[in-house]
Image 1 (cartoon, rainbow over the protein chains, first blue to last red):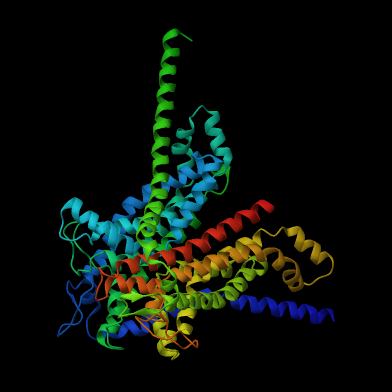
Image 2 (image 1 turned 90 degrees about the vertical axis):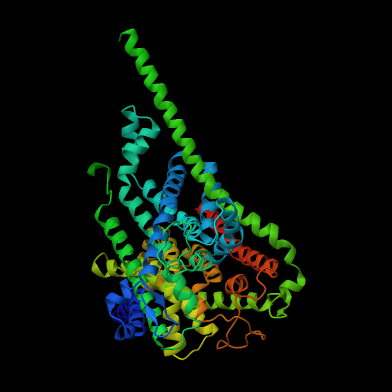
Length: 297
Length: 294
């Protein structure tokens, strides 16, 4: 009887183990299907021409499949949004974790969470109908749908990610460190800059990288707000066409299993690799340079 | 201490105090900007959208090539899709979390699984869309349907559910487990009868968050479930549907009368926001109540 029960318990553990593997399985399946549908395009263009080709005219005869302008657009949009989102997100996190009173925090934290939950299509819509006309008038430019607008909207999508993870990182700094600094006569502000930020730096970097990873993969905002011109921009007010926008906009028209269809999946592969690299770096940093205890400093 | 050094320390102390005050104001401004962003978006949506919302808008399908009428099919579609996503993601997520928190021992396997979850959480939604298109729609021949969309969204929301479920399990005190095991219950009996009931309320908040995430998702359903326009309400899981987020996108970018249907776009966005923020707010309030109880 007892033996049977042990066996049953062991069996149940294995069942749960299999369920726990599902995330890895899904990740592998995503990789497999992306490559299955994306690789055939390299029978048509070389990897080099695909990645560094400057012309993306998938529907002309013969078609041009060069995603260089799309990659540049994705990177630029991500970097510009990071320039806004990193200071804003990290500063808000420090404010919430260190400065804000408990009552304000109770009110402000849900605000950040609600900002995170805004559907991307709504932010895209807002950028399109409110921000774009405003920019067009304020800067006297031909179109408000451009790199600048998209970066701004993306920034507000990645701020909550950066803020939440940063706040966790700051909160996990051992309180002894802060107390020691205050006891030595440093002001609260000096303790924040000289002690708390250095001690939580790995967590803050993880936050920043994950925020950027969210920005580079975000689709609806860049699809609606970036303007959609597949060219390398020369100013922040030029329209661009980041990779996700290209995939989302063209997949519906691409003939099934045609060259264009495969090219879009290959673009998806490149995008996937980018986000994977971001996640690898974040994972590496958060595991290697973790502030474990007060004594390690 | 001489007179001069005292006044010097006083002066630097004052300066340090002022610089602290100045920096703190800067940080406060950053937090205010975030709150303002949310409020401004809400303000514009409500100001321009509330007039569009009436009984007809909520209960009628679109008419006159989507320039008039309501959004009933979109509301129904979004509800079906998010419930479908939850039906896929919730059991899988809970089961994963149970393994991770109750069974798994530290080591390479655990690290690999965590790595998988973190990466899955970072996969862009448009990639999920491509994946759903290649696997469910084409390879498994489910077509563009509620089923394909729900499976795709279910996988997309999996990391959210796993994360919150793990947190819920971690919050169950170990004394509960020890008491149950001490009474002679097996590990599974302990999990099933003691740990799960204690953790279930907080797991539900994760479910609500996943539901709202699925409801607002656009790129993942563009190729897998949503269509431009369909007259009939769905009758089976193999039907295509209209969905609120996709409807906003379509009206705002591809409609024939983009300017004319502006009020419909605002109205649809407002309904979507109501749904999503409402669910999130409910989850946040529910969660803080649970935490206070503890």
